[in-house]
Structures are given as C-alpha cells and as structure tokens.
Length: 281
Ligand code: IPD
Ligand code: CA
Image (cartoon, rainbow, N blue to C red; front, side):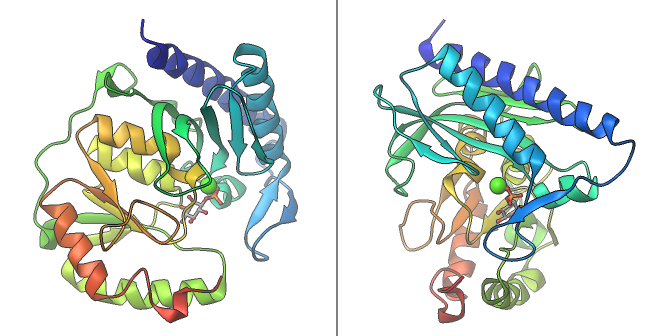
C-alpha cells in the first residue's frame, strides 16, 4: 500500500471516530441545541465545545500515529512538524448547521505537502471528509483516486453555465457579505440555480459526486478545502482562483472545464476577488 493510501485510511479512521463523538453528543443532549462557547470573526462565527473536543481528539490520534507530522487546525492553529507533511483539520465544517442540527456538516481531515499557511504552496496528498449525520464518507489519496464509501468517483461531463447548479457560501462579517451579495446578483441570473449548503468541504465533495456542478466562494481557508479539494481533483475536477491565481482565501472556484473556465470568466468580470467592498473582513 502506498504511503498516501495508508494516510488516507488513518484519516478515515479518525474522522469516523470524531463523527461518533459528535453523534454521541447529539444523543446525550436529547435534541437540545449545542451551546456556543465563544465567537471568532463576528458574533455569528461561533465555536462550540464540540468543535474543540473533535479537534483535540484528532490531534491526539495523529500525535499517537504520526508524531513527526505537523498539524494545522481551525480551532487550535499550527503545530509545526519535522516530516514536511502537515495534517489540515476542520473539526466541524458547517458549524452553524451543526448548531441548528441541520445534517450538512462534516469532519475534514487532510494531509498536505508544503506550507498550508501559504496559498498555492501546499498540495493535498491524502484526505477524508466524513458527514456524521448521514454516514457519508469521502476519501482520496494522491494519484490513487477518490471514493464515496466504496464507490470510486469520476466526474460526469459538466453542463454549460446556464444549466449549472452552483454551490457557494458567505463569510461571517457584514462587509464581506455585502460584497458577496453583489457578486451573487451577477451570478444567479446566469446559472440554473444556487445552493448555499453551509459547508465548503461538502460543497467540494458535492461537485466530486455530481450533486453540484460547480462551487465558488471568497474567504475560505485551507482547513475548509484541504481534504475535499483532493476528493475533487482525484475525481477529475479542478480548483483555481481568478486571474491565474491558485485557490486561496481570495477566491476558490471548483468544477471541470469548460464550466470551470466559464465560471472563472464570469467571476472575473464581476471582480469577485478584488472588489474593494470585499477587501476588509
Ligand atoms: C464555513 C463553512 C461555510 C463557508 C464559510 C466557512 P465553518 O466553515 O465552510 O460553508 O461558507 O466560509 O467558514 O465556520 O462552518 O467551519
Ligand atoms: Ca470550516
């Protein structure tokens, strides 16, 4: 077995264990909403005790299994390693869905080479995105393929832009959202429809699986996309930024050509990455 496939199986094992922890918490609360512990970039950008507990669990398991690797997690930041490999973790991607008990949230565990704090400087090599509420589990290993459960993923031919179902998301800050709303008014009339699923990782896995045709968002971080981007590229899809840039917090666009190029062109015309209203927050 390749090293990357071994890492993929480890990612799957610990993401599933994290999923069980989340579901146990749900059962123990008997339908009550989880408590918000603190907020980050805005009062609606919440952290629950479960976000922290899941990241702690993932970090503990990785320290046991692969002590030399670095770890970058959404909640606890970067711990540098010595192997040149870094695990990039989003303990609950779709925290607001988790808070409202909407099933579209996921545990995201990716392994990357390079520096995950610098856009364009890292490459995912192994991945698991696990959706505890449905039991869906996407896995991928570089050069080996990607899977939903045991089904190998291969992108179907993409429709033209006017027929495309496009996922997107919005940031937590008011100013960021004002710009995102403006861009949305330019995109919505040009596509089949828009979906705001609430988890960037599930959006990208959706494109890989064919439940979305494309996805774009400004403001996503490496932990939102590290694992799911490999699921997509191993299924034959691609991600990029605008104006030749790599995917980054400035902009992530995901699909396959020719739809990817059409969406990039539209978003560039709309200045979706450079609008001054979007530069703060
Ligand atoms: C968020 C989700 C959401 C996206 C936001 C992300 P979180 O991550 O992925 O879909 O629109 O940009 O911040 O806060 O739920 O981990
Ligand atoms: Ca996230």
